[in-house]
Every structure is written in structure tokens, then in C-alpha cells.
Length: 302
Ligand code: NAD
Image (cartoon, rainbow, N blue to C red; front, side, top):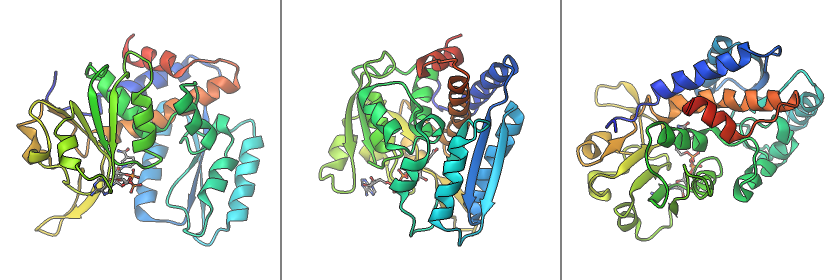
């Protein structure tokens, strides 16, 4: 197994497989990408999504609304997009204005077009192990483990972080009765008392808490596999802006069996998987029903 679990070759593989899927069909998947306000980090991410979409032959309709856009207007945009048969997937760029009711908005996005997996119906399907559209970051972790042929079944996986977009769905996906899951999962959070004892018991440690270099060498066991979901912007001593993960890469590198880098790790895979969801939603709209396992096998096994 490689020591550095780079996301770049996997992202490239996912993109090339998605591109050939699209080339072989008569339809072009179309995403509505909604951004409210022009937060620089959001604009950077949105630009990246546009670039990937263009490269893969998808249409990305990028609607940018002013920062004072109202919730009612957003709900109308979503209702119209749900009804518009030319739109296959809806992606709502966060952050939203703080006064918005995020649950109501998530419930308004049609579950069939919910490519960022915000709707409670899609989140519920994860627990029931039913097929649907799955959240891209947890899926990126699953794909990374599968791509690097890391045995997950029966392993003790400790996740730090219990958010609804990463920690909780990922924990449930790793519990799926599937050969690439079947793990024993412990989820830690800000109120966990014996955090270090738990992280040291992990065969695979996944950090998703949003605290730069939080996990240090003394918190891991030798030969553990470290998956870093965190993306934190910091300023170094020379005043440069950098991105670092939640794991202290340098201190943990020697002791770990393998580690994902930041940047160039899970984050690189995540944005490509948004297009996997788009293609899946588009295929379903054309009555071509392929499960997530069909897609993962096509990408990773063939
Ligand atoms: P969040 O703030 O919603 O949740 C953080 C979680 O960490 C909470 O459940 C909290 O209980 C836990 N936590 C905080 N401090 C802790 C502590 N000291 N000890 C133990 N647990 C603690 O964050 P999020 O949206 O899940 O994002 C987490 C990180 O992942 C961020 O750095 C974010 O930028 C990154 N992220 C990356 C991707 C990607 O594609 N790679 C996608 C989404 C988020």
C-alpha cells in the first residue's frame, strides 16, 4: 500500500470514467449551481465545479444571487428547478445567509435532484441502506479506502466529528453490510471524554472536526491509517495563507501506515463525486437505474 493516499489519481480516474459514461449517452447532464452572495471561498469552489463540469461534458448553470436574496425567492427558484425537466441536479453552495431555515430549504430540493445530499429523505436512506444520492465527502472517504484496497471489514474506525454532512453519514455508511464497509465505528465529538484513548484504539482514524493539525502523533497507534477530511486555512509565520488538515501531517507521518495529504487528498475526490451524483440523477431521470455500487464498480473495478 502507498504511504501517501493521494486523492489526485482517484479524482482523475473518476472524472475519466464519468466523461466516457456521458460520451456514450445521448443526453448531457445539467446541474443548477446556486450561490448567494460572493464569499471568496465559495466563489473559488463554484469556479472549480464549473471547470470540472466543462471538462466532463456536463452543463453547469451557475446562478449567483445577491447577498440580500430572500429565503422565499430561493424556495421559488428551487421549486422551479424541481419542475424543470432539463435540470438533473441541484447544488446549493454554502454558506447561506444565517437567517435562512436550512432544513426547510433542504426539504424543498427534490430528493431525485439532491446531488449534495441535503434532503432528509436521502440522509435517511443512508441509515436504511437504501440506494439514493449520497453525500460527496463521506463517499470520497469510502472511494479512497476502496481505491487503495484498504481492508475495512471488521476494522475499528474512529471518526472525530459528528456533523450531518460528514461525521454522521460517514459513520452510517461505514456500517453498511457491504464488503467495502462492515466496520466497527466509534464517533467522537466535542463532548467525548476519553478522546485520545479512543483515537489510539483506531485501525483507521478519520478526522473531520475543522481544527488545524488537531491530531498529533501521541493520539494515534503505530501503523494506523489516517484519513484527513479537514480543510483549514491558516497563516504561516511568513504571513502566507495555507490549507492544512485536522491531522498534524508531519508529526504523524512516520508512525502511520498511510495518510491522506491536505490539500490533494479527500477534498480532490469530493468535487468529482458531485458529478457522479449528477450522472446518477440524470440516468434515473432517463429511466436508467444504476445503484451506487454499479457506479463504484464501474469506476474502481473495471
Ligand atoms: P462542523 O463544524 O459542522 O463539525 C465539526 C465536528 O467536530 C462537530 O461534530 C464537533 O462536535 C466536532 N469537534 C469540534 N471540536 C472538537 C474537539 N476538540 N474534539 C472532538 N470533536 C470536536 O464541521 P464539518 O462541516 O463536518 O467539517 C469538518 C472539517 O471538514 C472542516 O475542516 C471542513 O472544512 C472539512 N470539510 C472537508 C470536506 C472535503 O471535501 N474534504 C467537505 C466538508 C467539510
